[in-house]
Length: 345
Ligand SMILES: NC(=O)C1=CN([C@@H]2O[C@H](COP(=O)(O)OP(=O)(O)OC[C@H]3O[C@@H](n4cnc5c(N)ncnc54)[C@H](OP(=O)(O)O)[C@@H]3O)[C@@H](O)[C@H]2O)C=CC1
Ligand SMILES: N[C@@H](CC=O)C(=O)O
Image 1 (cartoon, rainbow, N blue to C red):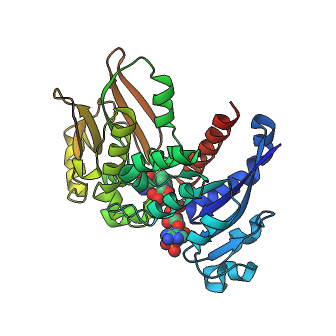
Image 2 (tube, helix red, strand yellow):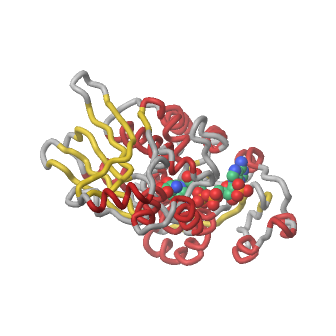
């Protein structure tokens, strides 16, 4: 039996849901894939750090309270010793789910570099490092003979990247357009029901959809990163986030959404990219008032959808959850399974 040791960097909504998922699914993973997972270290800004080579006590770490000593009360320390833990704990896989500053990808980008440089497999839900430095991180992973997986960076648990890479063989993708941010889509829907922007964002936060700084969701920065990732992974581009012209939804009001509804339209934040005749890729993020029969108009709540424009099939649309703690935890699990399968094939 294979047992992979994991180090969790960041212990917020997604990582907690991931740990709970492992508790529930470990027996099935063993039965179905022949491996088990054991969390041997966790670091978090407010809780501190804990290392337990025989595996952390799951109920204890989930109950740890930053106001009451955090992981120090469990024998750990009060500071987030990310660099030390990534380098020195005998983990096979680093699970990175901290925060991304959309401008420089930090602190997540450093965590990713440390993990790969120290010869550990890396899975992350952070789009910043992928959008800003995928080529560098892939090269580092190849050099070290380890895997770098990031399915959760776009569309949460809906495996859009892997699905397109594996199932669209023989098709040429000319471009795509999609709803790629669960929070803004949820917020626009709630505004259509008459809620103001602030109240709708508070709801999205309580449901675990929003970024630590929800400005990233509302101003389109989150979608900008996802468009860059999809264009680079699936259209073979080399876009930097700054190449994606971006406008968010903060200028829209409940009156705008009501007026659009009267006209048979619905506001959506749409991210898109398309090959240009000159061989480049043009990409943008902008709110659009879509007719109700448009294939993206019915995507509601925190759901996402991407419609790929293919040469032989025309539009092929993939839809599913775009945000959520459990949904994104599943993305991490699917990445770990992909690593296991690639190593045992
Ligand atoms: N939630 C979702 O639906 C999705 C999330 N993602 C991505 O997954 C990542 C995690 O999301 P989520 O769990 O919802 O976010 P949370 O804000 O709930 O969790 C992030 C955690 O990381 C901690 N953290 C921040 N900086 C550091 C650091 N330098 N060292 C150690 N810990 C740190 C935070 O501590 P503190 O709270 O003190 O800042 C927090 O506990 C984000 O990058 C997000 O973009 C991707 C797809 C969907
Ligand atoms: N905040 C993001 C989470 C997933 O990337 C969103 O709302 O889509």
